[in-house]
Image (cartoon, rainbow, N blue to C red):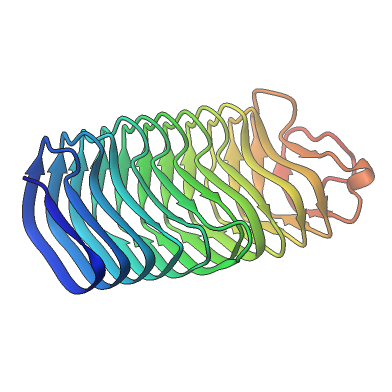
Amino acid sequence: MPEKATTAEISKLTIENVEVVASENGILVTAHDITRVKIMSVEARQNEEFGVFVKSRTISGLVISDVLAHENNIGIGVLAVTISKFLFRDSVVTDSDSWGAFASADGPMTKVKIQGNRFENNGDTGFWLAGGSSRISRKLKLSDNTSNDNGGGGFHFTGQFSQVQLKGNRAFGNQDTGFQIYNCISKCKLDRNEASNNQAGGIYLLGDQSKISKNITNANTLIGIEVEGSDRVKITGNQAIGNGVGIQLFVVTNSRIQKNVARTSTGDEDLIDLTPDCGSNTWKKNEFGTRNQDCIE
């Protein structure tokens, strides 16, 4: 039988050391408000819908830890209007028919940490984080996660974000882009991640005042690092070898691109700036074989 908790309010609930197999939903927690809930050391497999699903108007203080979710329709889902103080760590989500795991809020998300998880061989994106379109989600950290061989992308962010940090994550062998971040309002950082051998791109960013540094983006089918519609971005010390294009900027202004290595691209060029004469962008001290404009150095 599935583990289920449904009421107006849930507080100080712990679900631990449970195995749920072949139910409609494995672990299902729904309430109007959820605070201080822990789901730990759980195995959920071969369930018709979710392995683990938490749904509420407000979620604060949720911990999902050491969960094994495999062969479900969706591995792990968190759905609310607002989400704060959410920790998702040390879990393995594999072989889902659709997404591996997602967290979605119609309103803002704050103080979310996703760390040490693995998302592998899922039918769609490995991990999807969806913030609201009218409120900015802030202080989100993803570290030391791996997302590979999924039918969609590795890590996918939609909504409006600020102060997002991605560090030490890996995305490889996915059918779409390794890291996709849409609409970062300000101050997103991608540092020391690896995105290689993905069927689309390695890193895609739409975000102002952001930093992309010391990442490895090799052997992606399309573009190693792509930045679009952004202002004041720093792209520094990255490696982009053997992609269709190494690094490409489209409608990007007031940005610095320096000390990157981009070589042996299989498509157009190693380095591309689609603004005539590079506009207000500065390219310095990059190592490359080919470029689309002389203003790229």
